[in-house]
Length: 265
Image (cartoon, rainbow, N blue to C red; front, top):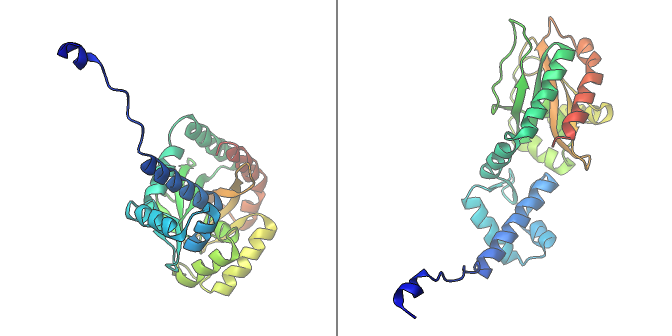
């Protein structure tokens, strides 16, 4: 065969390296497991759940830690999702038609309740603002999308605390700083545990000027199709406009928005 003809014949595409493909699949399975569980897990737990040897699981975790897709938990013995995976999830969540639909849910809610509404999620040991729609008031608190706020003194944060597994909640309350933000901030773990019991029972969380003096907020859970709490919808406003009683009166609208939002996750 002439050399020119041989040059025009393209070799068949190479099959992916079976070892690399297997490692990638296992890494994805590990990340999917952590994301679905919604809590940090130890090396032994991950190994058992994935059906892998501890040495193999340890190697996967080491690589994923180095790339930022995993992070050590507070107790250093467990692994949770890392900043790279959170950024990937946030980028995916904030693009496409679904984001526009979620924003529309918030906009409709603002029209009904007359105050600023937020869409938040749990990010490690803090609350991450995913989206917000401002009410047209001259006096309002502005929190940009992407900002983090504490768990222990915000309505969304206490809601996420209440829906954590007890062991995870205890770890957060033991290691996270329960900083006093106002005279109303709950700074004792036992008080926050009691508050979490109330939140679980009543289905919503309140911020009674615990984060910022003069600011009241109320939050409700956003659940996915498996009924797991994935996010929260909250409304906040100055106490002179939004008393705790007035906030409670907005619960039906908040819960309806949360149901609509859950179908868009």
